[in-house]
Figure (cartoon, rainbow, N blue to C red):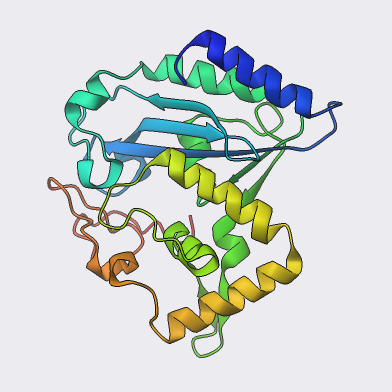
Length: 249
């Protein structure tokens, strides 16, 4: 969705479906980021692609974003080449369109996503202005590990595979539109139903214990260091850049 007219139509359509300013409006947003530095720190990444969908998974916004001073497009992760990103819209324009979309949906927007704090930060969203609350899927699906007395967290791809049996990405790159659509599907069809969520978490726990996830979804089998840029922010043992771990952030 690229034109201002299409954006205005999307806002109008979703707003009409939400009668009254107090009705919750579910929105999923996902952002891919290119590297402007070599470490895995958020400060060494800038948004290069953003997608927004409604509660039915319908695309409301899908924009590639220019990244000045880019070190690497991280193509194996983002799916975008340097040329793709150079043809995108300026960040200021992308932010304006995302902000306008969310503000136009009223004052009770709930953002749904996986590690959505990063998306909120990259899109410079403010609680009480652009959204009212968030649903963090990684927290919803985490399972308790009695052996180590801590929690096991799952990637979006593992959650989707466990709940729906669908293999996201496979050997392909990430796609923020697909990620946003499946994030919303997980919420609507699973997280919003406590009984289904409990069953899903039990299944994820069992699949993890029995090592039933496809090899392509296992972090150890994924290429994370790309073009000299460290991608092991959540695994200090494999980190090459020495930046603080992203665990717990």
